[in-house]
Image 1 (spheres, helix red, strand yellow):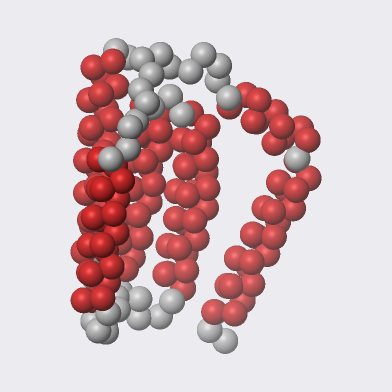
Image 2 (cartoon, helix red, strand yellow):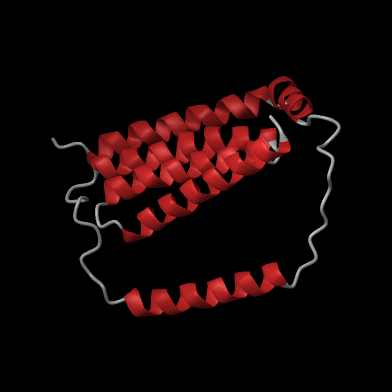
Length: 163
């Protein structure tokens, strides 16, 4: 893909990411907001691919879109009366003020930081080395973590199900 193709893909994915993030905040239906959150995670992974950060893209898909997003959707589906969203609006104004202050801070930092740019992509791919360390040296803790997550999901089902 040419540099122009990467730039076009980057901006398309950035627009999808910002649009889905706005949908997360503006939708009243919690389940649909969670689906847009998964879309936002996938768009962020696409942005990482366009920036030659293949390991971050894989982690974004596996952990955020795969594990956290699906776990959140699963939790919403097990919760009663989740389709209405938050009925109380008393924290709207403080949340708006805090978000505005955070936005101003981020824009100030982004505009006043000198960002070093490189015209060359990275020479070595780091994914192979990280995968080898993860699956050869640390395979046991990796598998223990997956079994613990499975046990937590089964425990959540057992606690929530109707008797």
